Image (cartoon, rainbow, N blue to C red; front, side, top):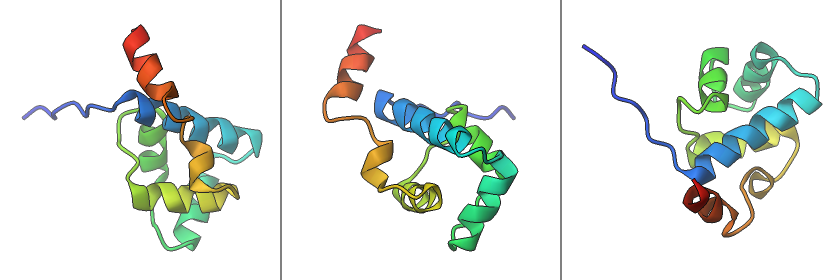
Length: 92
C-alpha cells in the first residue's frame, strides 16, 4: 500500500525553511533539536523534524509553538509575512 503524498501550501513550505534555517544558525543537529522539543513536552523524533524540514510532514500549530520555543523565538517569527506565501504560490 503506497502512502498518500502530503500537500503542503506555500505558507507551510516557507515555515519549514524558516525552522531549518534557524536550527542550523544555532548549530543544533536534528537529533539535538528533537531532544529540546521533547524537553518542552512535545515529543518529535529527529525523523519528524527532518520530515517537517524536507516538506514531507505538516507542522501543526502545537508543533509550531513548541518548535518556536525550542528555537527561542515567537511562533510568528517562523511564519512568512502576511501575503508573502500567497504571492510565492502564485509565482509558480
